[in-house]
Length: 145
Image (cartoon, rainbow, N blue to C red):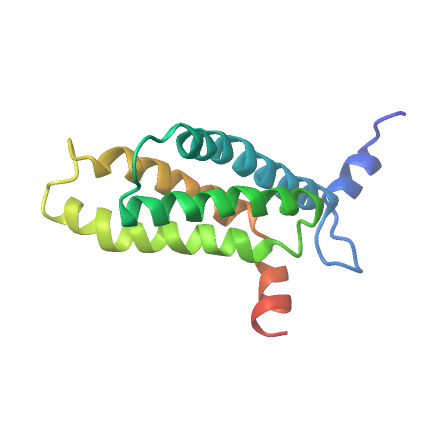
């Protein structure tokens, strides 16, 4: 198969029937796969190796992330139908940054705190979500549609 300028352009051109490009479609699949593998491996390892009884809030958190990683597998196969999963991811990270990290930063308590690493991870995640989520598609199909 010969790669031409036209074939590259067609990769980034939005499909008229679904409204997103092939590139965005495969990028969504990649993000779901990354979520399933990276998040899933750490969460499920913790669940299977945990000893003793779970504390309620950490139990809720690990249960949520385990479910999220399983649903991300569906996103690999149905990337557009599973966009709400990415919206949940974007929303929780944004809310966490606003209610946890921002007040710590304002009071100069973020540096050196246990929240510092999570702040960096969540901030990077917000940027990735902003770039990956097909916002015009979301507006058309989930908000105004």
